[in-house]
Length: 249
Image (cartoon, rainbow, N blue to C red; front, side, top):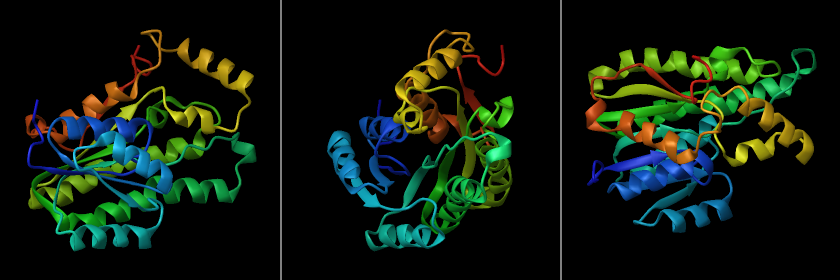
């Protein structure tokens, strides 16, 4: 398929996991892909893995200043965007009683403030008919213990998809959310847990998924591409949950 032929797509946090899977899927369907991330070595590896003339730009998705720098870097390359996948973010968990202000600030900077101002800075670069897809989470709906800050940040993003859609529609752009359940990504290795606890946690989560397994980054990427493509032009300000039935059954 070549749904994205002659189009340019930006994927934030595109050097691993869901972001990399989406970037590869876009490129395989004809898009010129721009990825961002903070780790230059990971970006270089991802750029080579994606191929198809992919562009890699080092950028901190949680910084307002970096949001404007990203827009300037794209402008300097005379790049306009047909789709944006706002994927970069952090997942930090702690019991409510133990949450420090720093965890709140780090989470909301990366998951809400940064994306908000990225979209603001990038809006002038959107072509008519452009699509923005935001990576949410079923944590915004499920009330999982220890996820209060993370869940709140994702709920904010889901709300933003509605209000930003209303504001950006006059420009011909639309905003939607894809909310994953448990997906097999490097994120689960960054939770600060030892291997035994991590395995036990994964097993407990898997037991709550009706289809009996974690999802794959490629499965989530297919929904991201659907929301980005012209075929979904009548989907506006909506959320698609991709969780194997975990939040519904």
